[in-house]
Structure formats: structure tokens, C-alpha cells
Image (cartoon, rainbow, N blue to C red):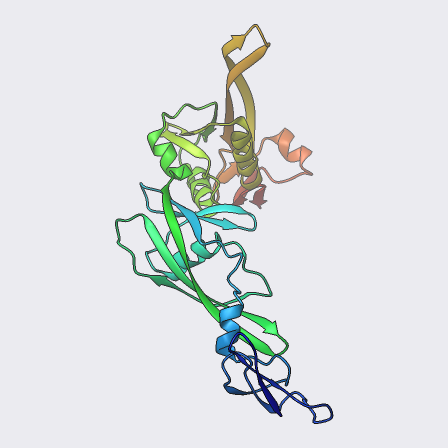
Length: 301
């Protein structure tokens, strides 16, 4: 091997023709002279390679996250939209929220590890250390770390906005069951909670024969009526009241009310059919026992 000294002061090692130079042989780093395994031309050690290559280029160093100042929830971006979630400081859930805001992480630059760095609790800032890994040469992997600063911005979540906003409703649904015992109405309450049909509800007012549900949009009220019709036998009618009218653009503002009346027959009730009704239903006996009161009424002889 022939050793030459370049004007810059660095040593360069070359291999005479015919002497080999295949991958896998022991050579010296062209930058610092450390003995390594690699090609004979332009071989560099890992330390010198990390000084020349910056795989963190393109990673955003500053970002922001939103937190509700009232309930402490964090706004998390997901594939289907945005969602407010609970997360403690320096928790895995909060780390996932922060990583969603980092740009530049690709398949070529894989994320190996992520952890929080200490910050003052009242500084409204978070610092996250990322460990990235990328292949800079054939078979050569380089890992580098980068610190990301996150600014915490205050933003009210929709649930807290409702608590601080004057509740003005545009549509209401009146649910009634005129019976001595309202077991179907009580079962409807459990189904509403189970299927979360009350998420868009802004106000609930109990009455003598049922409950009144208030909504800000007519579409939410119609969705609620459709849910009630799917789980119980009902009859309903609608009415509307004019609130305001703009003569310049011919726009109207109404308050709509939908009255939904549940079937008075509940489960385990004894039903007396009239002769005309029993004959219309195929000659049923006049006295029947109600075995089911859901979207259909089940009667047993």
C-alpha cells in the first residue's frame, strides 16, 4: 500500500492495481486513520460519518400542542379527525399526542426511541428527545438524536364550551309515555346512555309524563328521533314556531318541536284487544300478555 499526504494535512491510503480492495477487508478511515472494515476507497468510520451526515435535517424543531385550560384534555390528531383525550404529563398518551405534531419522520428516517426532557412545570412548554435511525450507505446505519420543543396553547374543548356558553336551542324533542307505570320510558333512558345518543344534547328537562330534550341543530334532533323510533314503538308529530324573518334575503329562523309518544303498553302488561282489532290481526284471542316492548310489540296468548 502507498501512503501519501495531501496538502490539507490528511492522510490518504490507496491500493496499487491488482492488489484487491474488496469489501470486508481491514482498511484505515480516510478521515482519522482508525482501522475499520470496508471498501478500500473512501472508507470512513462511524464517528466521522456522523459528523458529515445529518439525518435530522428536515425534522421540525418547534411545534405546538393544544390543551383545554378547564378540564386539562389534549387535542390529538387522528386519521378520522381530531379528538380530545386525557393524558398526564410525561405519559405515553401525551408522548403520542406530541409525536403526531412532528413533521419529517419517514420510512427512510425511522424513529427508534422518544422520551421527555425535563422542563419547568409552569413554563407552558414540553421538550421531547427523539432518536432517529437511517441508512446513509449500503449496510451502514447511523443513529442521531434531536430535541423538539412544543409550545402548549390553551384552547377550550367542545364540552367546556357548552358549559360557558348560553344554551340557546333550535330544536327540541318531547318524549312522553302516558301510562300508570313507565317501564318502557325507563328502558329508553338506559338505551340512550348505552348507545351515547345524548352526545349532542345541551339540555334535559324532566316533565310529568316524560322528558324534553333540547338540541342546537335540527339535524341532531332528527337523529335522536330516528334512534327512539328504532328502539321503541312510537308515534310522533312535528311543529315549528317562527322566531325571526329577514326580508332582505328571505331567510327564516324557526324553533322546531317534535313530540314523540311511546306506546303505553309495557312488558308483562295484560292487553285487552277489541273484537275488531283481534279480527283484523287474524282472529287473535281478546286477552293477550305482552312479552316484548321494543321496536315491535310481542303478544302471547
